[in-house]
Image 1 (cartoon, rainbow, N blue to C red):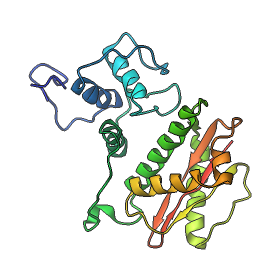
Image 2: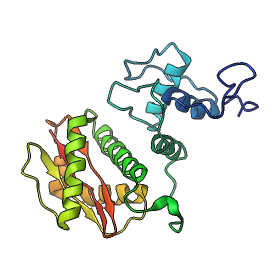
Image 3: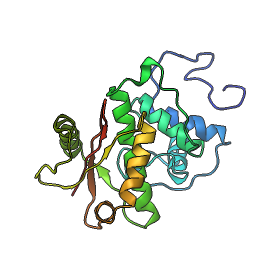
Image 4: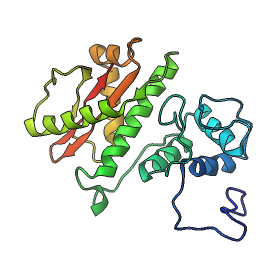
Length: 228
């Protein structure tokens, strides 16, 4: 990585391989791998576009690698999660088809990192749809995420699809297959795009906030999305 100009480490002669990686650092790795191209201005108010890290964050957005944690927020100083980093690299690679060996212990049903990765990718796909239609990107609301995640657990325990009757518009979904988060999020998104009712909810102009929940168990995935 040093020879290719991707990183020089946090200090001269020091790599700190065990130190946490921030979202700004994770942005600079693929940016430098592409030769640090000019990025122009971007939507993030928490990065300085004249700063090297700001250029990297803006470039990530223009390439569709990330939409940030909110439409105007990159959260550059926050540690990057494994799910976020995997999503960055997957988009950077052009979203290739995924073949996954599900025989190992790392893909046990319901593991938290799998749920977080499915939710993150689902959010990316929603905003990719919005961007393509010229709509404002959605924001993930913490309270709405908690609502959707709680309802996903309830749906799993019920073993059926049922609207909560809560304060939000809802898209419900159940998928019997989908061994891993990327597969589940993509298939669920495709199903909703092909359902007029679900699609209209996804693109309604008056909605600016979304909450996303995924729940994996032995009989598949439950994935409620709530909007307002």
